[in-house]
Length: 279
Image (cartoon, rainbow, N blue to C red; front, side, top):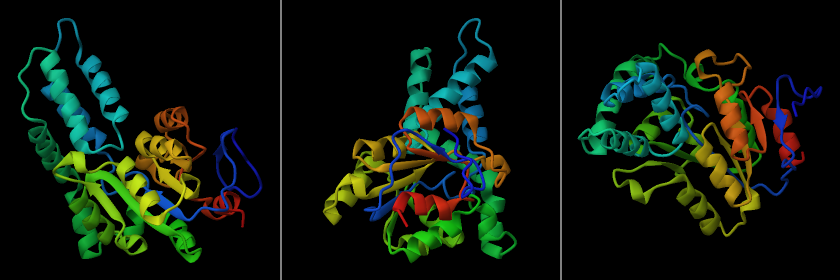
């Protein structure tokens, strides 16, 4: 149900599975689309690349390939980029083509993406873009609120870890996470968000019920629910940050994998945390 309660300025969807978690001690964040907008528009780079690389089938239009590519890509959103490239290679092969190694496609994609976002990185470095202009609306207030409450924050991203650390520093959010910043590795089998969650629980000797997560991809939502944590889906409107509108595709997808709460951004971070944490 949509909750237009007086305490909420915007739309907050509370699913039947929602219940307050006053025992929360650890908070996990995804990065791109959940906190950072540095890579906003990345599907506009990846989808055309897939369409370009996919051998067409007889009678298949470019729009058909685009639709399939988008579904393949977004189905894996939140996992390491390499998994999307593995999927591309498999699609090429099943269509009779001879794919490159998935790492080749990953590097090609990153080169193309870098062309799209280099001006944002330069702007952050030289001070012509304010860090908060490339954060999801209200994100810093949420991070400050959680820090004041003494909760330990973790960051886990499907983007390569060196890039995540660099961009977190440029956005001035790395300080909220300390040593707990994790991202994709060259040996992709050594990292996953599920592994990060398992590590959080094991190293802190806590149960999943103490975990709260925020994410705009299905992976972190699903993994959080699997251990009994509370999952907040951020259906962020990345192209129009601060609009207060939910991205329809994210809303449908994240609700479908069991999100307990869905929000468009963090405009309601204070009342939402009071509701979740009980005070």
